[in-house]
Length: 368
Image 1 (cartoon, rainbow, N blue to C red):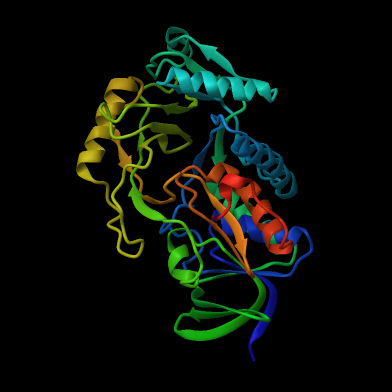
Image 2: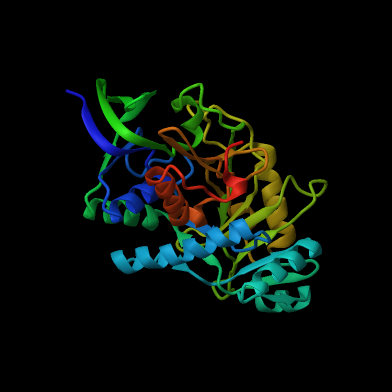
């Protein structure tokens, strides 16, 4: 007999677990299926830290981030696990962007300060700066691994079921619901659901029915690295360095990861890959340029100490997220390397879409 659930979430990485938590805390019966083992490193949700980066100049992202901050705090309150470490964020390299983001933040009553490069270098002696520097004291990092554990634990505590090692093979939308075919270690079974939410990252296109009109999603393998700090006394903020591509391959981001070093990476520069056939190794030329960047701009780090990390980005052409519904299918995809900070808010939006066919995400996140 085919089991039935009101809500089925396909993909239990960060966005899927957040959606499962949001549905369960609203009193709904929900099942989440994840093809890989708990804590796997095949996608974009693993690792200890992600930037809690508020350097946005547009309302739809700042609105989503405000909701995310509220929901991160609520999840921490519920689980007793502190998930945000707000040591501040510095953004530099493009004065126009610094001015625009500063105006957007202060218009909303957010704390933000523009510093001269010399003052920023005095405060954060392990870094060099250029142009105006925006300091956002209410930004920092998300404890990513702890967040995944907290989402799952809280969702289970509120009645959700999460199954790891259960791969969705097919999603078939019917007039009376959705039929999902699943493989669990060679054993196939079916689940019928009223509504299915797909949060499968790099595998989203392959899981959704061919008729589901997603925008182009490009999967790349990105390789940031942790670098050792030379002095234990340097203070390290999270950071964005906005760079033209004639100097380095892309913009630079980073943050401190306790016990591992300072994470530094280029944004969206990696090769296009099949997520099931990755090398999990950095491109040598990109790794070399990252060490060059650290040597030039991070005097407080040892360039030769790099320990590479591998993760995927699944990006839209615009780098805007996809949060929308068609029929009985809801999709959250295309987080483009900047989604993790928004995770509980994305879960809230996807839960809204799943439970209310008339709900709509902000216009930039909608399907055409």
